[in-house]
Length: 635
Image (cartoon, rainbow, N blue to C red; front, side, top):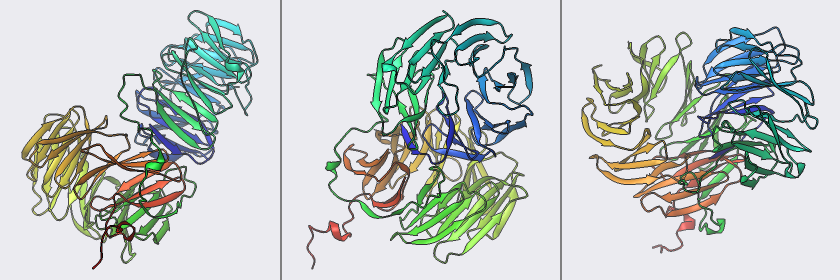
């Protein structure tokens, strides 16, 4: 499904069993949240090294415990929900029915709510060398020592006490994996030289999977029906609870951490070479929309690369991205606090390292301006003169930001409600106020218009000439907006697609299947992209011209002359397809795992960041290139 290169001392990883978010904790105190598409959404530093991370998908929370026994929780957007310190030393914690079970080797287990308030001191007999809490029931498995395990309820009543057939490794260097399903019935213990032991707390039975006794890690699906087992020979097996091998593969290096979801359909693997990968286990009849067909790299008929430069990453654990201007003349590399700009020949024209991080990067259509933004600042770079401008909003903070495609101005909605328009040189133009909680703010200076969503079903259009506001209420929740010179396009949660004029009057509408997640304007068509990889291409009159299934969730669409192209990144290769015919134009192997792809909107260029280089490519052969003119005469 996706693969990313993770740098740094990884201490722990959690994988959501239902919505497939991932969280990574590092030895330097950093925490990363990764969405289901493999993109790092946010990163925070929690001080000392991270001991444990857990994801609660119901409340959309990520909980972190550091070495100073400080417990913190963040929502999926990165906002801190609570931050609480404790006097006792805590080893780890578990999530159970919306509560937090906190425990330590010398401290009795505590049950906390999600505001960090202590609910109960659990009367479970000590010692507690390892503790696993069932997600759905008040059951606790406790490893008292190397051979003694016990199953308890929340009142401390012993339900089952058993001696393990062999020693459980409880050392800090290579501890045995001890994993539990959601109900608390199935407990799996991996003993490296003895195999995997499976305890059933309901029937009080014990099974053993030998696998030639070579086991390093084990994970259990939420329903307890599937196990994921790795060995020291770079081999991974997916096994049923009856020990039938469902799937197996060989990797490039050994697995350090493995996780599996609720029904055994997706797995997360972290290898000791730094690769973090997410795989999807397919049934025989399931459509393989997220996978590329296997082909020989010898089929590549021509070279697409124009230049490449070494990746300027400063050890930021794969968080860097590339962006390209609409005309393809300017490439920007961004990595939180470090940024670099390249011209069309690959020459570095600007480099800067900031004290604060900038999460949002925008390059104008002509490549003349680069905008960097965070919650309190907007930084502007003129790429022709290298003049820098900075506009600060420390007193109020930025809630929403809209930038003109040409960089002539930008619109800021402050947290206090003020609405300000500022020029591309950082000078205030006008200000007003708006009481609505607005979303998806966009501005187009040439059209003298700004659009945004207010209530979940309402679209607003702001006339920048006279300050007038028009709005319309559509038939369902809005998921995305896109403004073009010929109108406003809207996609909805229920698949409803609308085209509006700048007075918010509906010109036409179209019904798609499933939610719309992105709207991509092309030369003659408008593409509505669904969340299952389905894309609907409509002409400007609202007629469906073509329906297409993307090859991958990370695919990017663009148009070069008359051809609509799908650019497909997959691990260490990238492919190009013609959308209407499905014909593959080319496939190229990269120098490392692909981190980011940016395709220009109106030129035959794209930028690719892999683990080693930044690459600058042409999409299809440009006859003006000397190497492509072998079949032309010169007069």
